[in-house]
Image (cartoon, rainbow, N blue to C red; front, side, top):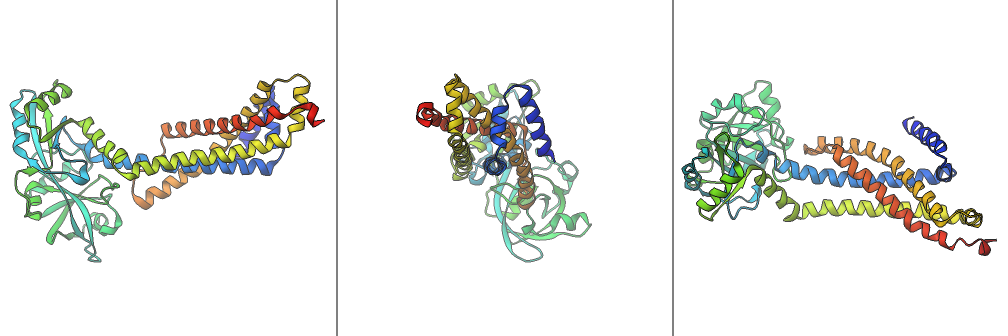
Length: 398
């Protein structure tokens, strides 16, 4: 129904603009038009899904970084990403207090460990963070109200957005049940829930106190931290203080602003792993597939009406005019074919989001980008197909 209304609107618009030829050419054979629109829609869905998963990859892996309540971050200079953090001495972090602009510093421990599903007993790796709960440094839902609970021994906060393979932890806790589990062969109790979300690097997350973290990881040395968060005094320039810290601290730590820390993680997934490249390649392949499909449709359209185009050239219409007609057809195919592709992509995003718990959402920027790529794809195909018109010589045809 919606597609029919759009078609009627475009038909009326084109007639009023005195350019009915391209529209009549497309609608003359309904089956061919349907095949063309299906091909363009498929190419759009392919591009939407690849770009959606790529952006979900980047966003999901920097949600922790964005949640940090700080202005500057210290990490080991040999660290590449959250997945491969190296520890460093917290003395480096506390040494930053020597600068007048620094207000407070907060060490964070993190590691992957084995979580055992309390129902099935199956182990699964989970990411766990440890920090001093006297001050909240995670801007996450559920953190503020549960800070005092973290001061108890052998307790953790569980990420309610973790995958179901860890067990019905969030559901049982919200029903008032006593939830306990085994983490690295140590019995712990879930005393609260927070929301962070699964990522390509971690399917689930736990937060606990630094004391409990070192109890769980009894082989870890106290004072060897993984992330150092620095809060600055009001009015301090983070970029200036970052440069001062780089000059002041030893070279074994990397000093980053919060945004640089986010970009550091994002760049790792974009350039240092195969995943980012694969999604980008998938987008390019979608573009190529769409180009080939549209080219075949437009080339066939030109070949079937070569005599008519030759007649137009014989009565005085120029090659540029005929090129305009073909490009109009290409533009109409791009716009109309984008609609089913966009609609089905919304459905696929919802399905993927429910299945993977990854933040696969449609954005206005992505929709505009795919529409632009679709128009370019169709214009490029039309420009190639129109070369057939150069051979449309009335003397040869008639």
